[in-house]
Image: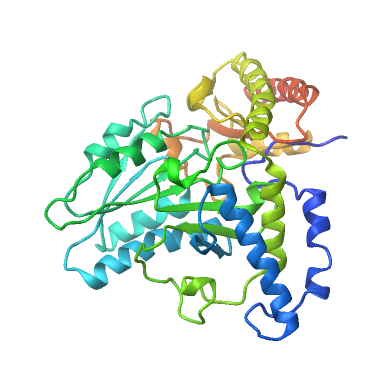
Length: 392
């Protein structure tokens, strides 16, 4: 039985060309990049080249790119780094603005900081279609707003947020009582494979990327930190990564990350890839919409990313549905892979006014490079049959 992988938002398969580039690094280029001897400097040169490639991709300076263990660490460094600096050097209680569409590494962190009384927080809600109004974010800015953290593309329901509009308006706002300019952070993890992540055009101060969402290796990500931005480190240690992130760098992972970014190609190529997947996405939405009591989560058309399809199937047990899909050869998820297995509905689905119970199932299908029209037609047929059987 051929399996159909439709969980690309959780992780992408490693591109063979990336694997080939990485092969041999651990055994052949094994020097510590911080060492002054030849072995160390060879490793350092590989990292420097990779950093330049990532910087070029987002139109940044190479010294503005900091490598991390992944997007979760990068998001934590961005948010806690800004907040902790403000707390250390001022007497104000920081206010943070974000949305209810964020990844758990942003949403849960800000919730925790708010619960512990470290910050004030505003969570902007989407409308019933999963769209965020940029003006609502701007309207939430206060005298003590130190950070605005917004996801580029929702990993759960595929909403494309108005990040450029937010960035432009934040730039135009003049500091008030505390002479503070709000730092702007964008989580671009789900967006980079399709959209322009030029930090100058986006108007951001911080931007998160992850390699394994781009057909690269797991365990490596990056955080763009605008030159001159003052932050506290998350960890104490050595002076690696321009003093921003201590610890010996993952040379092979970094090289693989850069190769994955290189293979994404030009913005034009990414847009062409998006258009192809867009057609398959709409084919899947059209087919699943015909199932009785099936409800699409998130927007339609150009405000939805090309690879995301999220449906709630009413009167169907979620565990039974997930098991049946897997046995039928379909790999999908209940939403973000970071909360799969939880009986609680995700904060994103709740924000849409929908709550999963034992008799409602939310499933996310995300498409990728190997998805074909035949795959989509098979999935529609299989899902329709499974839902019919489980609804009896």
